[in-house]
Image (cartoon, rainbow, N blue to C red):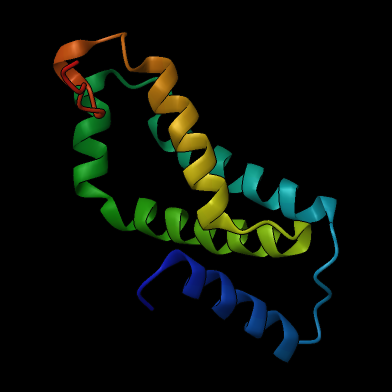
Length: 114
């Protein structure tokens, strides 16, 4: 798999093979929410140093969680008929444009000279 689009297609094909419907389903929203809560609980009530140390020592917990989130996001996108690459491109432009001026030394968008 090389692209997000290929990942989304892999999930779509997997769903078809398992006779799962790609229709909007509230359960997928709940599943993604549960995954986020599960990961956040590992870091809750820890200071920054403790969070960094925990993540360093338990990387597989977060690797598994992020993988579940991405697979679930692909599934949700398929259910809603949303192309993830297009959605990401749309919001990344909005976010980068919105916060472009907030912290110039950490800017992700290079300003062009006029």
